[in-house]
Length: 99
Image (tube, rainbow, N blue to C red; front, side, top):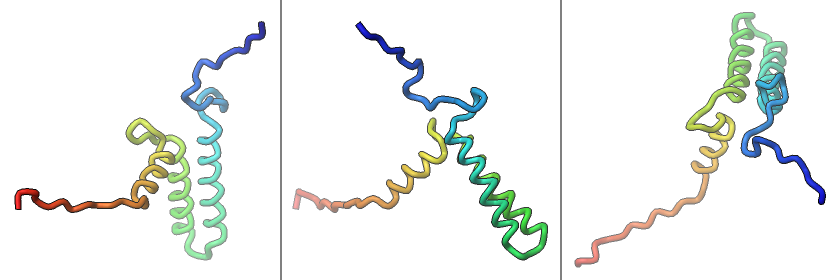
């Protein structure tokens, strides 16, 4: 009879970058650094303002990669919040039945 090894953790993402980061986290970090660096290089303004733009995108990428909100990652929390906020909801006003 054939047998296949079953992974130990089937609910969590596999931490493949040094046993600490997942591939998704690494992509968010690199994207934050790349977008912030590209915008800072393209926008013709003061050096301090370009550094602040770079820093905002870098912090945003690291926050999406590492922050946890209500026991889920920040990116999945934001996706769920967006879907909840923009879903079609119906509010039914029910009056008194005594009248």
